[in-house]
Length: 391
Image (cartoon, rainbow, N blue to C red; front, side):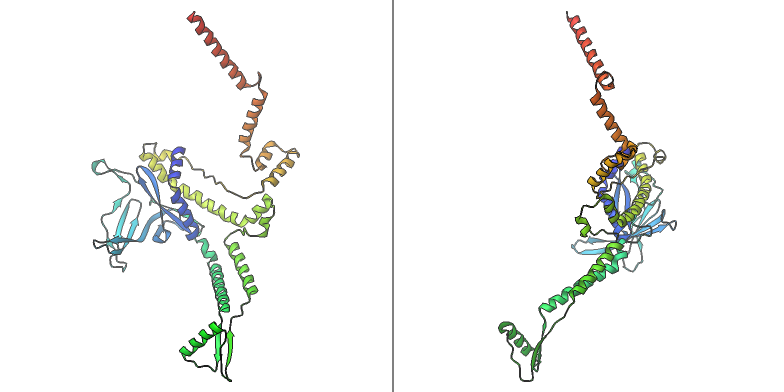
């Protein structure tokens, strides 16, 4: 099963990566499950197109799901038209509809389509999922997008930057005010052109010339932007890589402290990903049965173990130095191996140590050495027997 599972993961990488992105950005990601060329195929579906009907408040099982989407179709005159499709999925079949009038009144779009009808005619085979063929990956327990938490702060940040930029641009090209001058548009254009060309403008005795500019407090804007930036990073579980602390030689403990908020969110997301894998497995078991590899009931007894590989930034030099000091305290070798960041596992490291001791020891006490000696002796006996027969 492991080989088939790994092959399935490799073939659907782009689908579940996109689904994970939707889970974080939109609160939940969805995959539609089909069989293509006898193999399980995952198709990422935009969460904004789907309306699930859950069996419970925890949103674990589906009664059905509605997909509402638009397809651009071209007629014989090569004119594009938007065709509004509404598909309903339950545990046994897909029922397609069309919204031809655009008013929400649906008309059937053909007969219901059973799932997994393989082949044609008498040779066709039907596999019953007995489940709605959609699998959800939640970004959070309440399926709320991460962007919802920081949206207001991000909007305020963008507006403040936009207004500050506009103010600075206005300050470089201020408004020229002419008092006592004709208000006719042509006269004003002529005065403005003269001012730009000659840097001089003439006014009467009762007139006056001046500029109106915006006096922006750059320091105040900068401080407010920094406050908003910190708020966005904190609420969004982000890490400020431009922080001055990253310029120093931080220990692994200090780095893990900086990443603690992000680590909390990732821990929750990992739990949701494990639940997603378990929801996906019954479909995979059914495909193995279709391929003639055992039965779905047999494979259902096995669980999939999900192991995550985190690329966490740590200070290896500091941690290894601490490991060396730990060895002098008399603790067990297993504890030292588990603490050492460059050791994969205590068991693997013990096997490597034993192999190195055996290779260095040699002699009669080395089982590998004895096997090699016996093999060489047997070859020598066979060679002598062969020579005797020829004579």
